[in-house]
Every structure is written in structure tokens, then in C-alpha cells.
Image 1 (cartoon, rainbow, N blue to C red):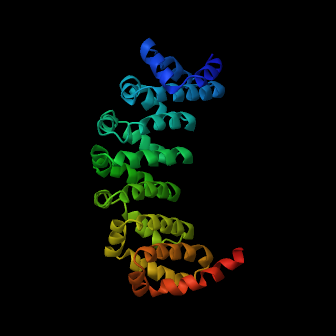
Image 2 (cartoon, helix red, strand yellow):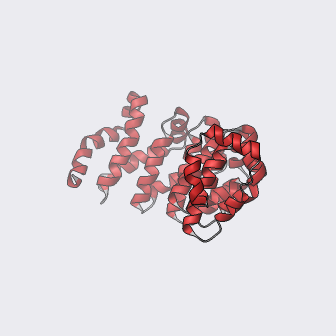
Image 3 (cartoon, rainbow, N blue to C red):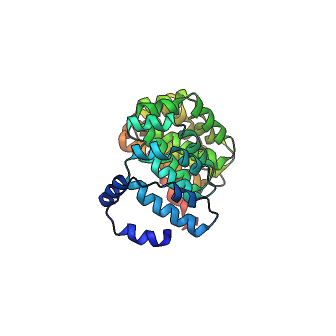
Length: 290
């Protein structure tokens, strides 16, 4: 049945769908039930139909009518179902009143738990969390007390999940100085700087990439400098010349200081002369890979 419905839905505009759903007060629960059928084809069709229909509904109605089903969807083992629900939550994330409903209906924590699962879904959750942080209630929720503990627990599982969570944290921190202060107050940025001295070179490189992002806004630069992070990175760059994986690590560090040099060239060149010497040698370090 759903297979025959999909082509018909594709011919209708969003406005036509919205009008039809509102006028006939259609119940979507039976379609949600298809997601638990155990039939992969039916599950896929259900996700596609629900994405189309829910997208035509006002997010207010979606939250009012289907919160319980979305909570079940977040706990569903299929990434397709998880993605469907996260996409619907994202529609409400930037509205102050709707964001408050996401928090009140306890949809935020189970969504964040998906950071430990499918990579594509984790990326959607990151976008959801960053959007949510742009509201006052969302930022307050991410600041604590419960969400920081949840994120710290996720980071403790393994290095892959840790880096995913840190990407979320940095995405929030770069929004404004207020957002950065919230992440610092929740102690969520500390693991990022500690990765500069791990023996896992790839983890260090990933941390450097995130620090490049964090250093783009002036308030991020100020935080990194006041905490001595830039000095530590300059030392890492100097020592990195003799690192067995210098061809991988040094270019990332050079990129970090290169971005700084674009916004404050004289200060960067004076404070971190190692950057200038390293930049001259970067092409030599990369040549074996070319």
C-alpha cells in the first residue's frame, strides 16, 4: 500500500499536502507502525512517506500529536528511522517556544545518545544541537546540569565518539562568546586541548582541525590564547618537525597558525616564529605523499 502512495505524494505540493492533512485530520500512527514491521522495504517506504507528510505539517502539531512515537523512533535500531525523527526535531530547534517543548518532552537526551551510533545520524544530531543552542532554553539545557554529564559519558566510551562530541561542542562554542563560556563552564572543552598530547597522532590531528575551527572567531582566539593553548600548539609544531608522522601532523598545525595570520599577521609572526619556519618546510614534508 505504501509503495503505491509514494508516487501520488510526489505529485502534490507541500501546500496541497498541508491542506489535505489539516482538512481531513489524517492520523499518521498506522504509518509509524510500519516502521516496526521488521520488513526492510516497508520500513524504508514508511520513512519516505512520513518524511513527506510530517514535513507538510506544522512542527507544533508534530510535537503535539507524535511525541511518543518520535521517542520510540529515536530508540529504533534503524538509522533511517533515527534520521527521520532527528530531522523532525531539527524543524523545531531554532524556535524558542518549540525548543522549550523539545526540552520539556525530554526529546533532547535520547537524540544526543545517537552520537554513539551511525555516523550520518550523529552528524544530524550535531546540527540539531547547534541549532538548539541558538535559543536561550536550548543553550541552558546544553549547559547543564544533565546534558554535560551525558556528553562526558559519551566521550568516555572511545576516541571516535569523543571526537564527534567535541565537534558538537566546538560548533556551539563558535556561535558567540556567551556560547563559548557555557561550554567552558560545563567543562566540555577540556578534553579537546588534552588531545594535543596524546600518543594517537590521528586523534591529535583531529583535535587540531577542531581547534582551527574554534580559533576562527575572535572570542575563540582569545580563549585559546588565555589558556595557553596557542603556546602549546607552537611547541607541538616545533617538536613536530621530528615526529615520525610529521607529514600528517605539521600541515594541520601550519593551517591553524596560517588562519591566525590572516586576521592578525604581525602578532602571529612575532609571537609564533616557528610557524614561519614550518610553513617553509611543509611542502618538503608532503612531497613523499605526492
